[in-house]
Image 1 (spheres, chains in turn orange, brown):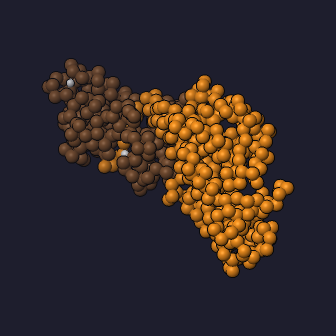
Image 2 (spheres, each protein chain N blue to C red):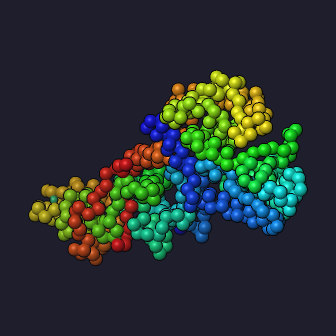
Length: 300
Length: 236
Ligand SMILES: [Zn+2]
Ligand SMILES: [Zn+2]
């Protein structure tokens, strides 16, 4: 098996089909959350959409989140006058059914059963208001940070990832993040992959990943990322500070060493195919070593 | 009159050996019967390949008789092709006539667990995962008995077979009897050694049972030698 075959097998085993239990659960949660919001803002013109890996096509079975935006139309004050009001009113509405924890621009919902979902599953709802009637750019409230207002654009974010031709590399990088418990935000990781691989799009996936890890190992100090929807207004340097960069460099070095000394299998473990083959092999060997006894049923 | 009272040393020895090797199995005495219950681990090279909830009921004449085995987890469907009797959930681990080869009378109980019972549950796992029985399977009922003796005696002649079984079941065999092989010679001038050897291996009781089974089935016990051939060791 080549390195690329291996990586695509790993990705295939991480893919969540539309009829998978995980996606159905996700859709149910989304429907619940959307209903709760809409019931609370009956007079408000709201846009509720998927925003995260579900919308970008970068979902992995091993860890996925539900990210939902809930944007009020520009000039609509029915959900609150200021951005902060909109944020707080969403918080109050969601608190009727969930434990809500403010997290940057998002409201993180707890209290849905994490057992039936991925390891670190969470629901994030991001309230905001469109800047104008084109319903493209939006302002978000920032519960932390110095600036309270942040301009963003969901479609620019989605297109930046979807049009990057680097979806597979992003999914591998996300899996690598989970396996190594790296505290880098998904959005920042995606931007880092796209930035580091922007002139490697024609390379094989395995070559892309080796380049990605090599860059993290050797040049992470120089790595910066920009919000494509707001390059000047949204400073992401705090999301990728020196401490985090060194936290990325160490496992990147380790991963490259693993590939070098033990092959790709050491990075993400055996694929399902390899697991199956190993299972067949050990059963075969166990049978070869066992007492060859044949079962018999007394009555025909 | 139970074996565990007659031979408490043997009871303690069997219990200690089995519980040391299978830490999740426990000896229990109920209504003067000895049961071994718990989790049976299918192991190979220190790895647990699978486990089954089991109950072994040791016969009153242990270690002469064979244990009655049940899979108690409800995992194995009670179907004849899985070698579980639907009515009472008993597992058909082996053909008693073959036990001398698999677990000779007088062997420690532990060797039954690591021998034929291990093979039985390893086979169950393999069948469940879509493979065939690793060592093949005997046909059910009389046909399986026929297959076994065909393999042992190298004959498909039912008359020859039942005569052999008659001699194996007899209290004594005499040299002047006719040899079962149809040579027309006396036993002492023909297959006497073979008959003596088989009488050592196969108990009179088991031989008599098989004799009755084959007699009752008559020619319906005979089947195409190609059907249910002993399978080679599992190939992937
Ligand atoms: Zn059977
Ligand atoms: Zn003869």
